[in-house]
Image (cartoon, rainbow, N blue to C red; front, side):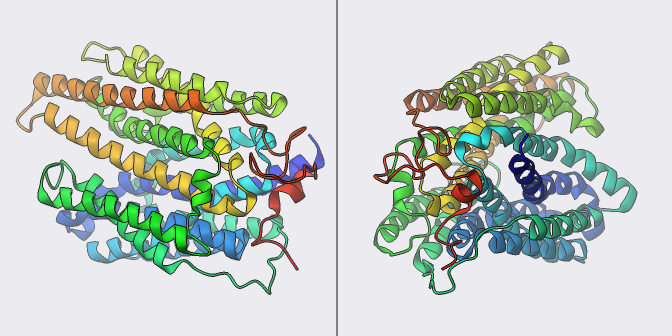
Length: 500
């Protein structure tokens, strides 16, 4: 390992520590919710504790991403950490459910910048060709977030009280802030530049995202899919998306530049891959523990450990794919193989019933984990390799936004399928059978989504990755001279980061 590689790895560790905050938070808070309700009351507002966080995160993600491109990614990323920590501090001190919901919204705003900023910084610090060396770090952080969240939440709530489910973010966030300040060095932004903020785009996209997330969240739970409330929300989301596209074509500095989506066909295809993975990831994290606890008799206290057969293969596959990609420059095979494994794994999960053993379920989960590992990080790398460096923040935000929206929509559809399969009157063995049937419907639907993602993976073009032999500095199909500067200069330069 070279000195440069060590420096980058240490810097990325601080970035990923901040990213871990947002990934852990929802799982920790979810575990603490029963205790919070007993203390604060307000059971009728319980769902909003999660909904408002998801809404704020989705709305804030593209805004943080674009601000990073305009004002410098380091300072914007640090600002998102500060907002998240302030929200955590206030949420931990809340004295009513209404206050908690308000402070969770502030937390969600900060969380939107954590994910968008982290992936944008990874994209600017490390060229796509070299990204494979660090994919294992990102996959490990994601696995720790999914598996560790419920474990940390259960321990903290049981021994320190539910307020520490929020306060636990403070020491981790402060360490990340100091770490990034000391180790992350980017060229200064040109003080003469006068960035123009796309206020119209922000307003239209906010309305669109709010409508889409609320429709996905409320469908089949609060309102029926065919109710006028849900239909109106979807209509607003569709009209808003069309209006946003029109606004972005006319504004001089768009929030999500159309060139990001139209510059190379690999970007929308990669977004499709990540959306499918989001559907499977959210659905697996929510319904697999439920199946194992209800049908297979596992204990609720081990809910985080139940997902280990899913998450460990994610880390292994991501590391393997990353090393091969960095060594050979070849990468298309991995999303193709990954989506194929996802399709096969979800089909096998759809066969589970009351007689399925934990070993068999673990093997099916491992197959899905391998597919996620081959697809998730590779999809992000392909997306970032398809855009210019000046759009790295907006592109990273877009991929995170669509993965979040895909997960929200997937959970809504899964919830509707599950509710239909499990009647409220079911008890005992009849309830176990109904849960198994509901799980089958969920993963059969997930398999169909993964099959569509497989088609998208096949349609990808394997273009050279930036930062490798023969690879240019610009995104694919850009008519610019090729250079081969060191990764530290290549990857950190963007219009927002240049000094005069």
